Image (cartoon, rainbow, N blue to C red; front, side):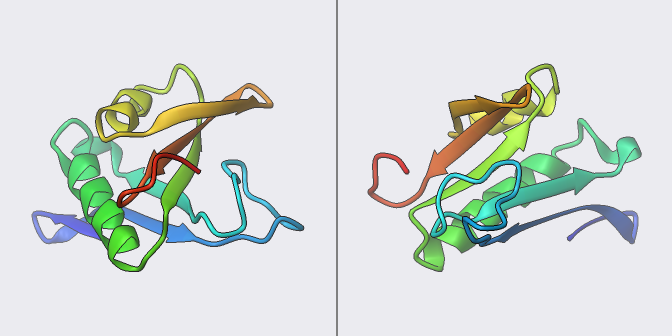
Length: 108
C-alpha cells in the first residue's frame, strides 16, 4: 500500500489463479496476475511506479518467472506498464494481456 499525506493513495498485489478459474490477465498457472489501484487524486505523482517496482521486486524475490495483467488498450496506465517492462502477449475481449518477465527468463 502507498500512502500520501498519511492516507491510502494506492495498493498493488499479485495472486496466482488456477487455469480452471482464470483472471482477465491469466497467462499460466505459475504466473501471478497483478492488480493495481491508485486513488485519482494521487495519479501522476509516481505512486503507481513505486507500487509496481516494489511488486516486481517482491515477485522476483519470491521466485516467480513473470507477472501478468490485463489493461484496456486506451488506459493511460498502459504506458507505465510498458515502461516497466511489460509486453503485450494477447488480446482478449478487447483488453490487452501484458507480461513482465522476471529474473533471467525471456518470457512466459
